[in-house]
Image (cartoon, rainbow, N blue to C red; front, side):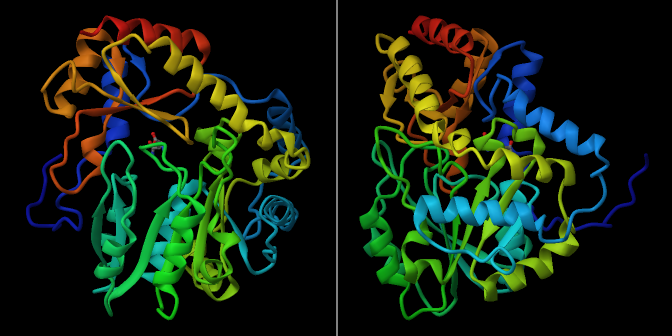
Length: 386
Ligand code: GLN
């Protein structure tokens, strides 16, 4: 169609298509094994599918309540209490969302206005900054570097000023697979006490944590909980990323504003799936086993490439494994990722795209939420790259 000029001035001039779409598309075009975008290549639980089908056949297919089914919010309150010993009131402090990304966008849209600053740790998941920008805010970055990606909380403290409205944290962390420790959260608590800073805590990989470590949810720290939105995801936990189901926890004054935005962004989310999740959540093994399940995959993958020329950067959570190729090539990571996809038929995500500055540490992210045979084939390829 003919385009009328000057109709639109981009609100996101620096933003292109998300790397996940770019790499998944390239993987498809190239018929490559796709370890780029994070999603399982195996089926979830038939029991859960049957529960969804049952709900549909029972006619539970119309709008759910705006904040989500009360019975589902009650199950989430129970789960949160059992895991973290904290009470969230289902009526006023829990909202069901169309996945983690919508919850993150909504929390930002509800709280950030022109001139507000938001502190973001990079490498950062790519939906945070555009949400801040679309709402008139400004992202302020703290760079974390391989292999530890440790946070220097003194540096964070120095960045805080009158305009700082939010700090976004993410643990277990995508793309690095690192986790925040209790000491990290205590340091954060200290920094924000006596400020009006909101914490947005992206905890969508809360159940995917390894080596007997405990997930440090911000809700376990009362002084943080009272100022935090916590984001969780059923897609990650129950292997159905395409269902786009998640939820948000927050104290009622924050949640009230969250819902004002939520009702006009999506209104409410998928009804039959909510009914199915009510039943499915009753068996806590359905999520408590997840850490072991993915630890086995991580160990299998890492073990099968231990003699390759890639350097393994330990993953402590999430379903991502970082590998450094600095002993193989000097190419930019974006170029190397494309070449690996085209020549070797294996797709990954270059980590530099998650930084704002030009930081290229020659590291790629591989998703190991895959069948053993997929991981075996990926390892075979990686072992050949010299
Ligand atoms: N969370 C997924 C990942 O990190 C991607 C989700 C998406 O493509 N939006 O790979």
